[in-house]
Length: 46
Ligand SMILES: [Zn+2]
Image 1 (tube, rainbow, N blue to C red):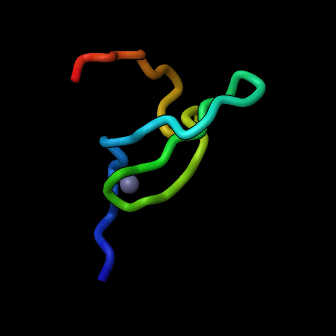
Image 2: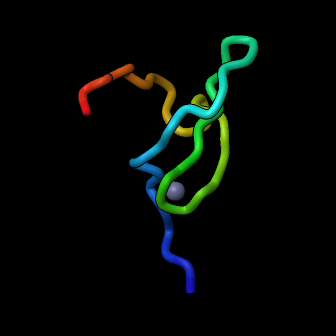
């Protein structure tokens, strides 16, 4: 059984042609950041 993932924890893998490719740390899915949220604020607070 697989729970739906909100992809709240992601890391940027690469940036190509202005597109950020991110990987979800929870489900290990890789997708474009634009597909996740239309406006992602770049926060570096760790
Ligand atoms: Zn996820």
